[in-house]
Image (cartoon, rainbow, N blue to C red):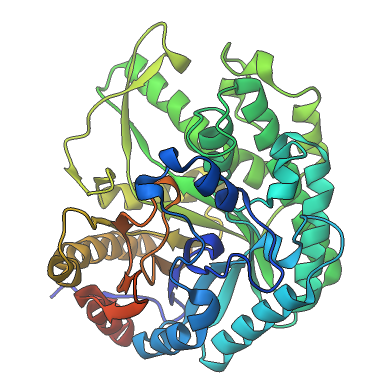
Length: 448
């Protein structure tokens, strides 16, 4: 009989970010983030005009939610801190009310036997810093270092797992190149500059954390999208490699080796737009990290096509598609982890996000709660994770995204990722069938 038991050290978790669940947007002295302002000023870009001002109201309901997480059996929870709740202007004097709020949240997790994995930054830039040029302003590096210092000094005695930032690829390219997220820019030069500053922010925070000798681990979280060639032709393989380097390698290689992928530095679409001295800066300021978080949802497939970006164009994947639009391909998780093992020497890894969403418009409440498809999704991805660990991949934990339903950026409250359903009118919590399934997985330390 095949038995999918996990190593004794393996940690079971769930994840969410501050602006997607907290609410309490104007309470406790919190300053606005870019999402608070954009959702009001650019309401037409947001589904149903939804704003994150209330979200799942974790700001007020965290004791209830954390107690529910304990019942589930969670051993860890990945949360982010709101930069503008701690520093309302992004810089300057910290808010004692904001610092005290996260003190209480962290203590509540620990009192319930749940280890927090804390992201310093998960997309919610203080609006005050956005108005000063955001990530394109070189001053953002020192502002982030100062913010990190405050957080490390205040919480580092209890928090032993840290991530500097979540998915810099989305922050840089979706916001500054593709024009989908604020500040809605479409400029390669600006996107590369913003991304470069993000990497320098990461290096500075890691270096600072090490200097404080707090005894924990620090890394960063990257969106991992395995890119497959459409055919076995050399042209398609090269196209897929270029696309992968742009989507993933552009972050993995600097974070793990202190260098940009040479294939892209030589590309006409990238090289001429690079910030001056950026290659040398990475080499000189690189700081190794302790672990890396990988978010895996979906693969991609590419073929060669002349006269398009990087001579690489996406083609259709013939896999099941979620309501959210992600292609469901559990085997891609195994491939991703094996790649990390073989290409980067098997660093310590956590699977920091993995999940499936329902469209709340097209799925009635009863169907959302009876979520056998989410259970199947979790089962198959956990089997592939077990397979990867069995082949030697150095993975130490799994974090389902997300514990409760969340505010999904420009999609607002339309898509539901949670193990717990939120009625946003009443804030009533209802556990989905998948919550009970995950409880059994954690209790058995194995997947069926």
